[in-house]
Amino acid sequence: MKAVEYPLVEDFYTIQGEGAHTGRPAYFIRTAGCDVNCWWCDVQESWDEEAHPPKSVGHIVQNVKDSGAEFAVITGGEPLLHDLDPLTFQLKQAGLQVHIETSGSSPLSGYLDWITLSPKRFKEPIDDIFPYVDELKVVVLTNKDFEWAEKNAEKCPDDTQLLLQPEWEKEGAVELIIDYVKENPEWGISLQTHKFMGVR
Ligand code: SF4
Image (tube, rainbow, N blue to C red):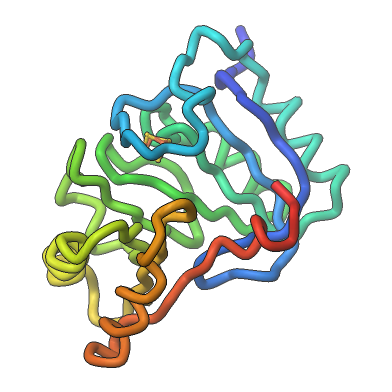
């Protein structure tokens, strides 16, 4: 039987730089392929699945185990373009916690301990994901993004962590978020601290 494979842009052991688990060491698995097409995307090299050779589940899981990481973060691209059941099953078998960062725009799959939903207007999330969202992380460029954030927050469970994250290169986004969070304290701020630290 042929081994299950995923197109892989890169995998690496680093520090989770953003969101609720900021500052924790984590093994990142970046799958290839994305059909969301955010114009400000900073990983556009991940969009074309064909440009990235497939790697077997065994190869990927062994890399995570060798790193000594306690948890893996599956990201992309849009990782839910792939059936994540085989990969996440093997990661769980290896004793790892499994997190995902997704736009939620393709059907949910996988054995997941933590779901970070980062919804994108360009291809909206499928409603099925909302009951399972642990962390809602909305990228903010302008005031209009707060409406988008609230629209998505309404669909999440009450205990979902709500985070607003400034788009790294958008001047003024941090100030907009600070004002908004002061008025709406159920929201917190996520910063891309890995960019300050100079790590991937
Ligand atoms: S969903 Fe993520 S990977 Fe896809 S275009 Fe948007 S930011 Fe880039």
